[in-house]
Length: 350
Image 1: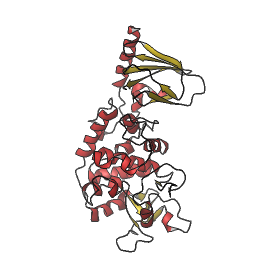
Image 2: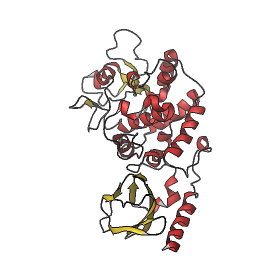
Image 3: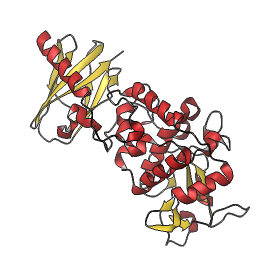
Image 4: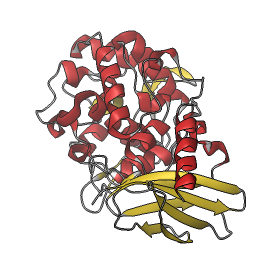
């Protein structure tokens, strides 16, 4: 059994250093064999150290949004976050608006203004109108009255178009939920405790072993793929501010840091553990006693759990939830399914 354990460990170490070669130049200093808080801290240093230009709130942010928020299909209009219908006769729900129809006066009806996705009052301390409060990675063009409707309501689960939920929170809409998730993740990455995810979103945080990242944000990040619009504005903001939102460049980074449902891996980092042929997602990788499995395979999947010492501590038929044994430390999970054998690892701490 000790020989088997050594083989498992060697197998994992070999795969963990076999990185994809498709990572953009901006990220060449980051060690993507890391995960969890270690990877987060490397990305935090990167987005902070490359944030070399602080835009003025006026006119800097206005000028930036007129570039970043243009509709890729029509550069005469900006896309309005939370908007969904240009033809329903209600300008509040408009999805687009003329690029110069922005609000710099007292009556903003029918005009767009600047929406802080992490509302200024939701940060601690509150976001000023400079520095963090003028970071355009957190600002979007929005109908002025839609902006008022959202106010400083926290984001919460829902479906369909944007709306205030039954408990008074705010659902950003199916089109925008991934954008919102990736923006909140960026703000926490960039500004740490000042912009904790729980300040701007509600719900449980069972995926993240540290109990920081809200589950629904990880779900939205996986369910709503990155759009061409997000990619373009990320490129422009690198030119204007110097830094990028890593979760737009690769949503899978959020999965690698905070666990949860597997998001799109746009750089194929997951090939480091041969996940191109993987049909089972095990999370969280650091657990206090329970792990979860996502899979679409209809046939039975068998599992065996080995402590790093080589001792088999549990086996059986895989379900969506597994209660781990009492032995702390690293554990290897062998998954046997019709496609082949998959090996995952988790760290158990009680």
